[in-house]
Amino acid sequence: MTISTRLRWAEVLPALVGIAFASATWFSDRGLWLDEAALGLNLLERGHAGLLRPLNDGQAAPLLYLQIAKLCAEVFGPSTLSMRLPSLLAFLLSVILFSGILRRSLETPAARIIAMSLLCFNLMLLRYSGELKQYMTEVLVCLWVTRLTLSFHKEGGTSTWPLLLAGLMGILLSNTAAMVMAMAGCMMLLQWQLDGNVRVLRSALACGLCWLGALTGYYLLYAKGHPSQAYMLQYWERAGGFGPADPFGEASLRYLSRKLLLMRNAKNIFHIPVRWANLSLLLVPLAVWLVGTERRNRWLLLLPLPLVLHLLLSYLRIYPFDIRMTLYLLPLTILAASYGLDRILLRCGLGGSLGAWMALTACLWQAEVFRRGHLPIRSEELRPVAQEVERRIRPGERLWLNPDARYAFRFYRATGAYGFAGNEVTEGIEPAPAAGEPYEAQVEALRSDTWILLTHLREADVRRLLTGLSQRGLVVTDSVKAHAAFAFRMAHP
Image (spheres, rainbow, N blue to C red):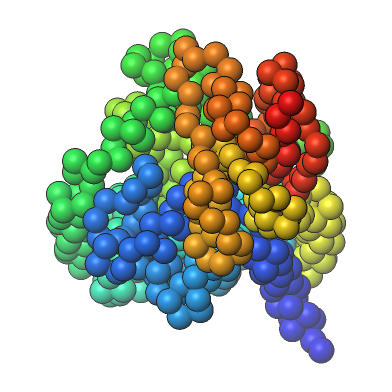
């Protein structure tokens, strides 16, 4: 095997390890969390035409994503694995697209190896590659449009149709497609200014007008007046997803620093337990990218544009700025840093095989650190707890669910994981803010021995609930636990 062949395999290895991690995450079939279960219920209870209407339970997702997830449930049977399959496929396609972008854009194999490992060994990306949410398809759309924009520039503006169609499809697959298409359109316009090619200008205008028309139509037909809009605005306002009213005040600076710090910590670009080292390893290549970009590639400086637009929408109370909502920005950040790293490696004489083998060694070490620290990814394991409760429950006893457990419980019951009768189950009611000990009162009011099933609660909250029930005279006589799901048999005196 020649050196060049070995190097090509070395570049592929981080992608293969990342695919293996994502596949293992998907096959683990971990428990559904709140929004996943609510979205899954919509898919179970509706046909393809019904998914064109606003969803229940405060859910919203791109139309094409819903149709694909529904089709997977029909073809492979209704289950968590089938409905999460679109996210896994989106991850696999994203890795392929990112590999193509790196081959076209970076000169050194070491930079390509490091960039791919940063994409594949990322906790947020791996988590959403195996979840019933659209965030991984948003990453796919971002990379798809970016890849075709690069091809557009390489070919002098002749490949307009693929880029145009990718943007139109992206609107139906991604809630963040508008920011990515704005970046692509501005890149095309800047390239026209740099090259003076009229064909590039015509293509940019054609794409821009078609994309704008499609976005307007999608908004008027589907997004405008959506029943979940008011609920989501209130939710994200409480969760801190929107910027303060004064974008230039001290509160705005605190908001930005808090969000960027949260993104850096959660997306763990580098798995090194030294904060300044993590930050330096990211900021130094970004600085070199900003300073060292040649004039002919000046359009690459528009890579942060989606971030700026997303922040602007958060200040305007239109779209929240949150970790999972910004997952699509991760490959753009990695790509920008990789351009700078590519320049650094060339200046240091590490653009050949020595640099590549050093990079591969570091990346495999990072993969092992990531595996030990973050895998397997776990969630609220309601299903095994409910199955065990079904085995242990006695005639005349009831099952009470806290409100956040009800969607996953309904989903698994609908897919045949267990078969509780309707009169055995009571769903808890979300307490009013001023109410005192509401859950305890709900359980006590059942007047029979009761199993309580709890998810999406911290262990301290669970202990507090059990203490409140014991003060009312109820006694724990049996219990089941699986990760963040709990069940207790409460006996009345």
